[in-house]
Amino acid sequence: MRKFYIEGGHKLTGTVKVSGAKNAALPIISASLLGSGPSLLEDIPDLKDVRNLAEIIRRMGARVDYQDNTMEIDPRSLDQYATDPELAGKIRASYYMLGVMLARQGQARTSLPGGCSIGNRPIDLHLKGFKALGAEVNINGNIVELTAPELTGNKIYLDYPSVGATINIMLAATGAKGQTVIENAAREPEIVDLANYLTVMGAKIKGVGTDVIKITGQEALHGEEHRIIPDRIEAGTYIIAGALMGQDVYVKNVLVEHIKPLLAKLGEMGVELEEDIAGVRVAAPEKLDSVDVKTLPYPGFPTDLQAQMMVLLTQADTASVVTETVWEDRFKHVEELETMGASINVDDNSALVKPARLTGAEVEATDLRAGAALILAGLKANGVTVVENIGHVERGYEDIEEKLTALGAEMEKVEGTIESQVTTA
Ligand code: UD1
Image 1 (cartoon, rainbow, N blue to C red):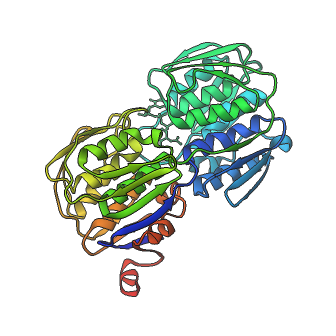
Image 2: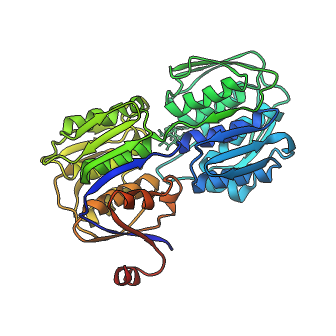
Image 3: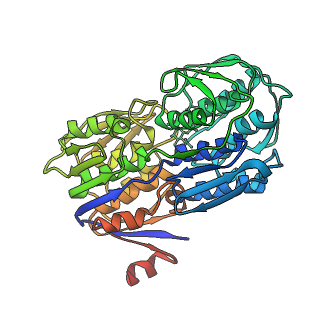
């Protein structure tokens, strides 16, 4: 099993470039199958989730060429409506094939999604949307099958502004007759990026970025070129690294308006920040003030930065409260941080984070962002931290080890037992 070995206490200096957004790339790669010809997608991050999705659509018959962060997808040879069950189970975003295949050929089949284990991850809102458009839904074990000889636009109210449901319904609605209205839609930047791509492909979409999205179905969309937006969660992770250990860290390829909630909180904590058009300069202050953080759908504080932010809060001068409202089981990193000396009391969906000195320890990445948080904790901790199960981190961070090492971190990816890593590193 691969692990990261991190020697804490090294200051960070220099520039780190943020990659394209995973959570925009996955739906956009999926949406390319709606084109009548090839699409060229740029800034596609080289991640396990991306490679799995590319393989899923290859096995469905599409041609996919992927190199140097550019993916060319030609859907003309696609001749399957079902995803490979084993591969599809590995990534949650494989469920975008439901919306896409429904719009493309009125039939879709996939296995129920995998991805991070951060609580109950139902897809009832996706299915509610598909049904409202006229699809018949059959669930057999973990296989979902949809059929719809014809899709017809409808009004769909989402009980919660789910990112995945908004995307999936938007994808399906591009192939529906007439207008679909999604109310209480999610507003995340990744949804806007997808809508921008669909629009250049010929889709008619209004209101994206607000909570009411209107999609008018079209006969056919064409292939297009598109550059993926920068990953706001990756950007946020490096900015927090800078706030923890930065002497002078410049995080570039950042759309600053996408990370306003994080920057506002860091400002309140006394972190030195300088924004410009392309990025954010950050340095760790002498003293960090405590702040309370509550995760919310965009434009609230992102749940995907909650774990990383918690690490920074362990270094504040007094206690802070972190409240998780998006996912019901997203404090798994707490136990691991406690192994490193953190003092955190969890009560239901709130965590009281008290000031503590972090010490290197053997910890496990329980999910993608928890893994990122443990790496940040390792950068700050006294001594050596070994982060196990880094497959989770590799699902979402392109070249994290190279990027942090270039900033001055002492970090290495190693195989084998922990003992051998520590003695040979
Ligand atoms: C996406 C992101 C994930 C992020 C999350 C919230 C991707 C690939 N992943 O996940 O990193 O943490 O947004 O910003 O883009 N829900 C339902 N029924 C549904 C769908 C969702 O009850 O049908 C609930 C979920 O259980 C959860 C909440 O809605 O409590 C948010 O989920 P959702 O916004 O759908 O997240 P994902 O799209 O899965």
